[in-house]
Length: 115
Image 1 (spheres, one colour):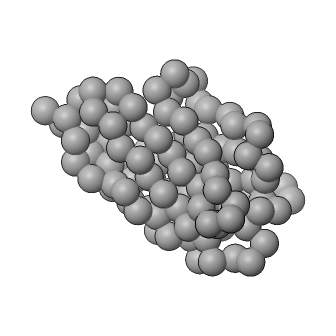
Image 2 (cartoon, rainbow, N blue to C red):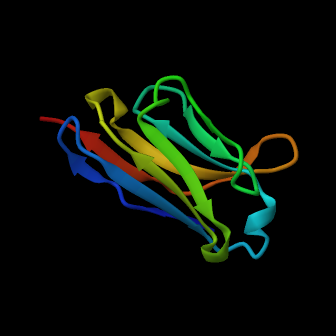
Image 3 (cartoon, rainbow, N blue to C red):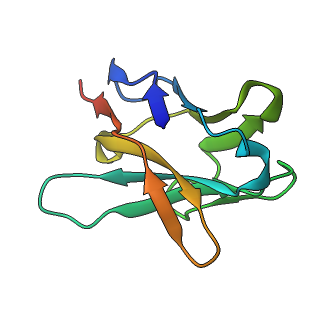
């Protein structure tokens, strides 16, 4: 299981930190990612980080504002979201990357950015 937490409602410019804790015993073997989705739109890639935690990758829309990192000892991947904008409003889900694609997603946590 992948369980996300940390979502909520904030004003523009504020920050949130999302957490995703995995119950899989081999967490530290997988690249992990964060995705977001709004009603009527396709799921959007936000960020990923390799198994070692040394190679983060961010979507252009969040580069410079979001940070992805992980703590393999805690089986947890984080998404630090700064300078939030209304367009960041979405359900955020973490995912595990299998051999070819992201093959397992959590249920998601709602992030709402509004004044």
